[in-house]
Length: 84
Image (tube, rainbow, N blue to C red; front, top):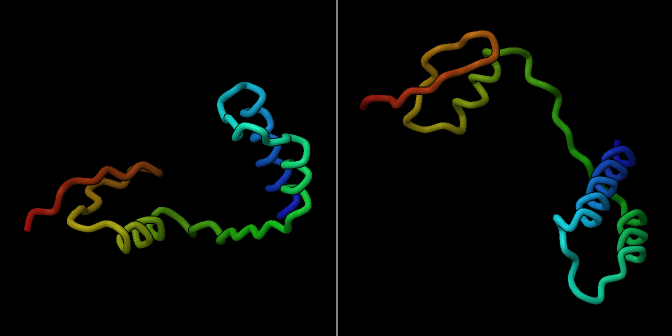
């Protein structure tokens, strides 16, 4: 997984640099930068997917405050303010 993520990330970075969306500092050699980045060991952490819409609500409940889910339709959740 590390190799796939590194390859996709650095491939996208190369495209952004060539399009001018990412500008490297003056004097930076693209080739040596990418050689260095490819040689580094990347650590990729990915959690297992959630088990369904209710586990998503439980997950969100830990991080939201003063907001309550009001309607669950398929995968869409609408939120409304909680009146105290």
